[in-house]
Amino acid sequence: MKKLIYLFVFFVFISTASAEAFDLNISNNTEVIATSIEMSSDANVAEHHEIPGWAVIPFVLLLLMIATGPLFYEHFWHKSYPIVAVVLASIVVTYYLFGLHNTHGPIHAMAEYIQFIALLTGLFVASGGIMISIDRKASPLLNVIILIIGAISANFIGTTGASMLLIRPYIRLNKGRIKPYHIIFFIFIVSNVGGSLTPIGDPPLFLGFLKGVPFFWTLSHNFGAWVFGILLLSGLFYWTDIRFNKKLNLEELEVSPEHTNKIKITGTRNFIWLALVIGSVFLDPNVIEWVPAINYDGQKFSFIREIIMLSVAYLSYKTASKEAINGNEFSFEPIREVAFIFIGIFGTMMPALELVSNFASSPEGIKMISHNTLYWGTGILSGFLDNAPTYLNFVTAAMASQGGNINNIGEVASYAQGGVFENSILYLKSISIAAVFFGAFTYIGNGPNFMVKSIAEGVGIKMPSFFGYIIRFSIPFLIPLFVLTWLIFFAFS
Image (tube, rainbow, N blue to C red; front, side, top):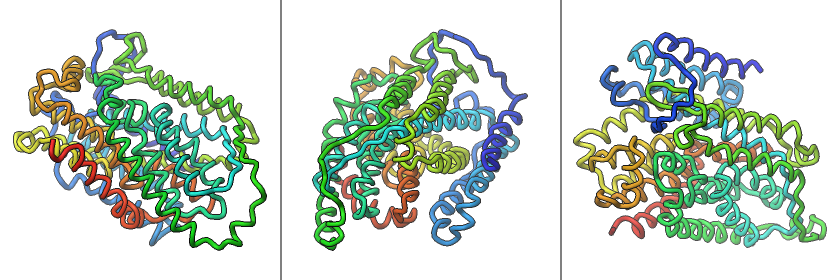
């Protein structure tokens, strides 16, 4: 409870400090205005000082502490990471408010964080009340089938929903033989690459949809890369699991009783709560005019959607099957950890995103824009920054380089369909694929990554450190995927 107070104080601090600088009004304004979470608008850029390079130090420091804390000062880190995250975020927010006199950045970062954590909380709690029991003998082939099912379902219930629904039965199925690589490949396939086909799949794609990208655009243009990515990662996992399977002691495999080969689902009522969370995603005031909104600085921010999601989280937990909750060993620790870590990330990454955005929109940056630079630029930054604002920054720069405006829904739709913009489909495809695929590169590349890691650690699986994840798994398995995807779908286009 004490640590939750820090979270409350953080938001109160932002709201109080900037209360005199803006007026929030709730209305049903029917004017459709885009809701991108850029760190600065044209009007505000003119009013504020240029962001200095040293302002990224708190963000770099947070990343280093996330990477080294569990290794070198584990007791301090697990006890104090909420305080560390809030303090570092508060330093950057204070500098923006009183040093740069910029309320725009902190308010947009806070709005984006609330949207992010509300969705993750709703999906996490609702899925926690659903227990899937697979009474079969674990095998590499069965594991691959589950991963592919997760990749497909991620496009209907999001990577977070699919991850939270399947990670526990996946772990139970492999009880007695579970290893870190089982979890890592789950993160690669289900928590990231799998969600490439629909706007529901991953947050960057959903923001693109809200901006004007047609709903089925991702299905028609990302399908080839999705199939290639899923098949390659599934093949690598199958090969790894086969090798490990041969090394297992046969006596250890004979401790389990005979299997019925049945699948049992407990807590089916929570599928209704899960559907409510997914459905509420579309209650965006910039798409549906009658949805109430908070108007600030010429933009409309949703709040009804977030209230629904958090309410569903509460009600789904209160009405959940106790058998499912106990069987899943449900705990709020994973979402608590994500909530605090990402307070720090959303708060401290503002300068980094603003510097990237300013360069990408500059004459020098525009000259460098091509589908190749967009692929690698979006990808590398999506692995270490939140991939949603990274996606928007690069789409903004790509459109600006050809005279387009991301805040014009009609222009975005034309850009996605080719229209008068040369190579625009290729540009948007490279940004979309990179934002989703590269989110798997680190634990912080995408929200579900950290949650899956925390759930695995909660049941005793010793997961690799931040650097261990990158060195042992991302570099040998993901780098080939990124390079081959680039060579096949972009390099020679």
